[in-house]
Amino acid sequence: MIVMGIESSCDETGVGIVRWLGDGRCELLADEVASSVDQHARYGGVVPEIASRAHLEAMVPTMTRALTAAGIDKPDAIAVTIGPGLAGALLVGVAAAKAYAAAWGVPFYAINHLGGHVAVDTIEHGPMPPCVALLVSGGHTHLLHVEGLGRKPIVELGTTVDDAAGEAFDKVARLLDLGFPGGPALDRLAQRGERDAIVFPRGMTGPRDARHDFSFSGLKTAVARFVEAKQAAGEPIPVADIAAGFQESVADVLTMKAVRAAQDVGVGTLVLGGGATANSRIRSLAEERCGAAGLTLRVPSPRLCTDNGVMIAALGAHLIAGGAQPSRLTSATDPGLPV
Ligand code: KG4
Ligand code: ZN
Image 1 (cartoon, protein in one colour):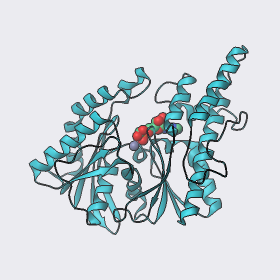
Image 2: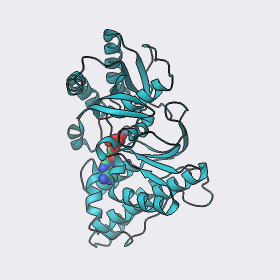
Image 3: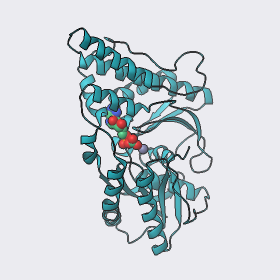
Image 4: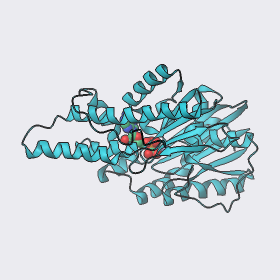
């Protein structure tokens, strides 16, 4: 069975093609991504109208490139992100998926983007054991309990009550004049700073925060106040130390709560996903803490952590193998789709 996955929830037009090998394994046949990120940079964030227009222009060429790379004329099934994401952007991928499914006479599957970020890990690491997944991207921060990928619903253990972690990276990067998207630039700058020169707050890590939720807006405000105080005093702004201290706070909170969640639900594996898990400190601290807690850590390559079509194809293949029925061609997009 060969599944095509289409992703258009934000600023990446992704088309991936995988072959289901059975027993929780997928083989990657094609991974084509066209990004509109450069068109958003001058606005300091993703502009929904620009993203939708870019998807419209890129969708068919990206599908064609993926089919050529996979060496096939058509897949056996089409899976597409139906939410969560930007309303107009989602519509482009879903309309394309429906049209091609109807024209090719193949089944159509509506896929949850968040589950895709989890499923993509199976491409490189094989069948997924019961695990906790930590998803960190520009739009999402979630701790998920995955018991049987494609067979049992994914359960949300916690999410952010305000800003997503990647969003906090982008906002602090903007404050430090690092451009957009700021996460990678902030990561590089932090390498030159001291992690504990400035200790920023760790939101929702107190004993009363039993649920596995996150909060990053207080941290963002603390960084802004620190910069303002330096400016008011006419002192130089220690940007590298700020970046390192901020990054340490985010990485500390994310990895501490992820390990705690895995221990609470009694699984032996932590999976990372989402664009912000490319962050060097989140990766190294996750390795350190999983090692200390006796947990196996699985992290997809950076290319598969950011939005792409392979993740949607991988979850589609797992669902189909798990007995899911095709979605109706009348299925609507759902920008606020929960896990
Ligand atoms: O998953 P993704 O490509 O798109 C969304 O669904 O949001 O994630 C993009 C996010 C951006 O906020 C970007 O700043 C952040 O991931 N990011 C990073 C790093 N690389 C990407 N954040 C921190 N450190 C990085 N190295
Ligand atoms: Zn994403």
